[in-house]
Length: 79
Image (cartoon, rainbow, N blue to C red; front, side, top):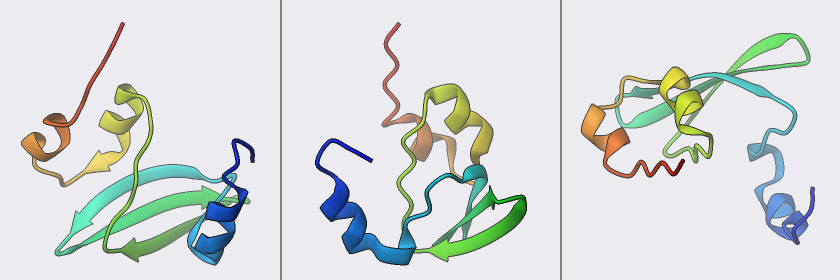
């Protein structure tokens, strides 16, 4: 962890998962569910919001149940 983010990460406490592979992010009612794999086990966590900061092909693979306009309107791709 670098870039001076240690304080921000510390403030998140156990709400931040490091060294985990996100399998899927789904809209479930008014919540979002993130399914991830860590240490060989699959985990599920629900939250009001999730920040997804991945390349577009990864986002397209893991995001589920979101209206296309919601996902694509903010997508910016530069080649």
